[in-house]
Amino acid sequence: MDAVGREMAMSKKIRLATAWLAGCSGCHMSLLDLHEELIGLFDAVELVFSPLADVKEFPAEVDITLVEGAVANLDNLELAEIIRSNSRLVISFGDCAVTGNVTSLRNQIPVEDLLSAVYREGAASLPGSGDAEGIVPKLLPRVLPLHQVVKVDAYLPGCPPSPQRISAAINALLAGELPKLPPDMRTFG
Image (cartoon, rainbow, N blue to C red; front, side, top):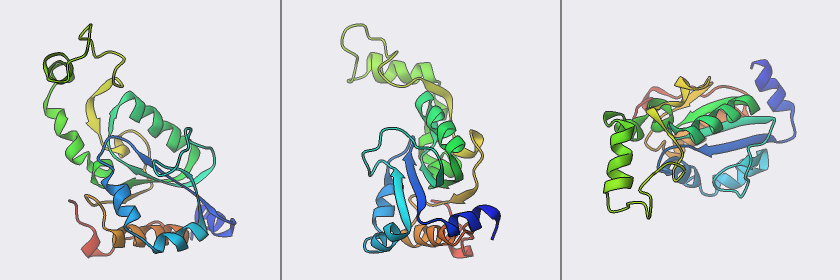
């Protein structure tokens, strides 16, 4: 067990956060599929930030953060950097965070063309000016997996990861270890 693991094992409750960047929220739905196992989880952790909770700002001194989704816009980039600077361990949670997955399909379309098709020409045209600036967060030129933006400590693949895979990873983290998924859990998609 490393120093971070020993420190977390000694603390009263582990401060856990989950975050949702550019993705579908399927990873969070799979987390909820832990069902009654969540009761035991919340005996060991304090959920300090999550789309499942009404917390507006990412807190300091988070022990573990599970980050779902790829980095697609400036808001995602800013949140990823805040998460990294305030978390002891950052875990790429699901294939979008790990590889970019479905979210990165938009990398085939130049950002200006995408904005024009969706906001200027499409059925969802902007009222009035037809200018998308300020309506949606500024898109990055390419969608990136989390590790291309910030240091990631572990990867939890799957689209979404199965509840069994999430449970195995969380139990390892609670024991002060980085997840080591068995070979049958190292698949993508």
